[in-house]
Image 1 (tube, rainbow, N blue to C red):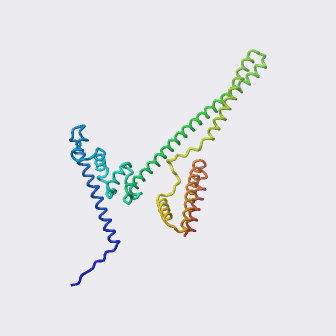
Image 2: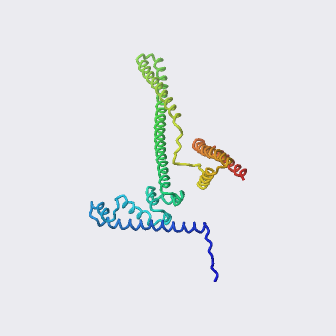
Image 3: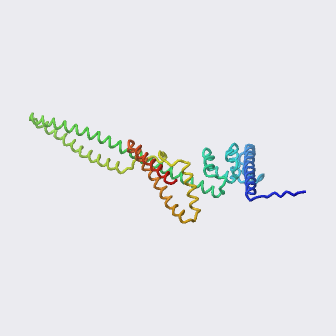
Length: 304
């Protein structure tokens, strides 16, 4: 009788481990969902005000733990994309809005992260969102301030035009009064002319000051609206390349890393300048956009 020896490679064992790990994650998360459902059912039956005591006496859960279970049961019951998460990962992701959660998990490969890494990533995301919100608020404030200045300038220019027309009319009336020899009328018209000329001096000063303030205000470019940007798939490739470069100790690769980061930053600045051209000189935008596109094409050809 021949005994057949089955050779097991490390790759086969690794695949088995991943399979068991995935099954365990699914089981734990599904168990948490089931617990959450039952906790919600119990909470509806427990007398108001006694929920905390019931949890402590019957299942030894704190209210925060029970709340996590119930939220997990609500948020993850019908999600196939998030079915492979661990329970702690699922709880961490509760702080991400439901409509963003699956996309966030896919883009950041959450399954491969430790809970601590995931929490750090979420913290960074929230910090960036806070900065963006602050930037948007500042942009809106500056836009409103600029609109006020523009409105004041328009009003002042209109007032200046009216004062100028009245002054010219008074000059004509004054000349006629001098010819008629009516001294009282001359004095009356001269007083009105002096008043309008004084107002003209004031409005001209105010116009110059408003124009100076407007020049000091930057052109309003909404931070939330990105017209020219690196395509999402290219951005992912750039991120992967950065990680590969960081892990490589080869001197040539290290040199490449420094130059590469500089090029990426300069390209971001180039896109910003291109957008400014689009907002300030739209007729010229196509020409500059074609220049950027042509440059990228030549760079791609030479890199092959």
